[in-house]
Image (cartoon, helix red, strand yellow):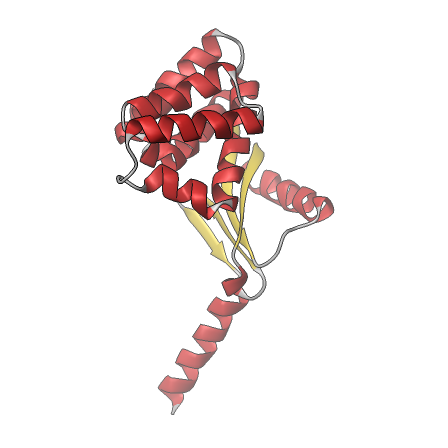
Length: 186
């Protein structure tokens, strides 16, 4: 299954595939995805957690104890917690973001969904998220799951990446193209 999708390959793809197959067999795909989404949100929101995950300085034992505390605090248990502990024990916790991304891709394919990476300058309202999903569904003909990243440096607008297609309507890109046009004219 991992070989069919280039976004699900390598070490992270193998771990994601193993987790997906276990979650499918246990009929807990949605619960595992929710746990991993919660962990990813915590990871994105905490520089300390990022450092713990990425730094080779921490021993597996230190990572394991810290991770156990984080999982308890987040209420992540069962298959998801055990999986994250296996990543830690195997010294692969640094790849957790890629594993989560690959797992999401497997879930989307399993459910017949497409996944879009969306970058916005500020958090979108539910109304705007729904409008974006509807617009993307009309283009793809599939339900579209959104992975939304907030990046204030794009100033305004949004960047949507859906498979190999990318639409960049960010203000930063528009300003850069105007600046380049002015340089060429001058």
